[in-house]
Image (cartoon, rainbow over all chains, first blue to last red; front, side, top):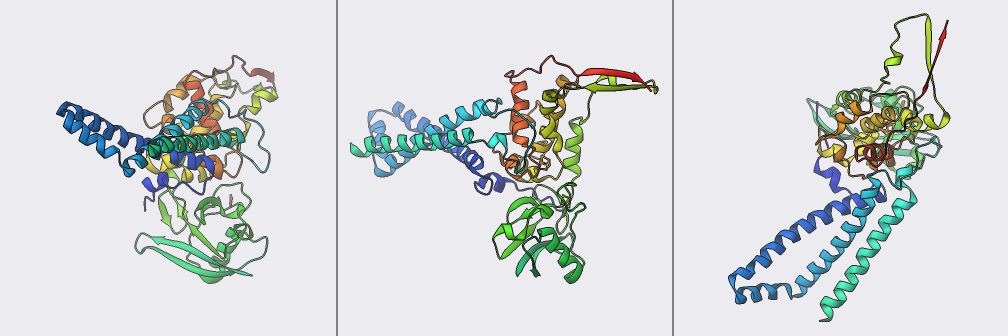
Length: 141
Length: 249
Ligand code: SF4
Ligand code: FES
């Protein structure tokens, strides 16, 4: 018998299952992105122990267009991950989902209600706004 | 009107391949009707599972145009496509063609102890009829979860199930909630212990895909989050207990 488990492909797919699946996908990728940034940030700042010249050289690296783009992305990832994380904190504790009841056709799932969807859109909008603000400061220097 | 039905064929000896069949259809033709047309008139060797043809038995789940659906509950006309791709449900081992093995899925379900546990229901004397009386709001707490037909669509859509073999899956977890929240049941603590582990309920990250594909309005994602609220201490099972009614025959 062939196992046929989807594996990593399963969580890499953001479409077909509606907005909450897209939010799940974004939450995971922003989490991975922030972890990578965190490691890079620790490496970057640890350079301070190598003296002022090494530190200034490292700082120069971040003062480039690419560096600014990466930082803008980090701001977006951070804001989305935090805002959507708050939604998940409440939802995964059963809050804001509504009460179970008698299912009526066409069976719109309560857990995927408009409140949840609105929160996802707000998280995306907040991330976009923060990125615009961040970019305007970084590129406006 | 006709449509191209592209079916994934699999046998352990020959491996995987896709076969395409041109099938006539009407506005009301379901994907299952089309598959049965192929089986009856074109290729008898096509393997698929079905029974009720009315979204009740849960046997005909498959991936239809990339999404888990019941073949008997999906009309060709609603898919708005000239090509219908039928593949076996992912996350289930394939037996042959579209027929998948549900052993692990059913084992996960059984592991949840899907029955009422209450010492008062232990029937020792046959001449006594025992029945619990529940109020409508007590019934509504679990009713929607009891509509599950065990079709496995949620299990196929879940990204955690895709990665973690040990994860019980949305169906089993929602059934755990169905029995835990029942006012006749006395085994909440024992039940919660089963899923409070590394591969248990904590692996659900609320992607909601299970509820998106469920054909019966069970909303497993709701059941899982409500269940988790008990583990987190956000909710407590009410003291209200179903009243036992005893009468002699
Ligand atoms: S919860 Fe819904 S999708 Fe999952 S097995 Fe039950 S009926 Fe099928
Ligand atoms: S044949 Fe029974 S659910 Fe489709």
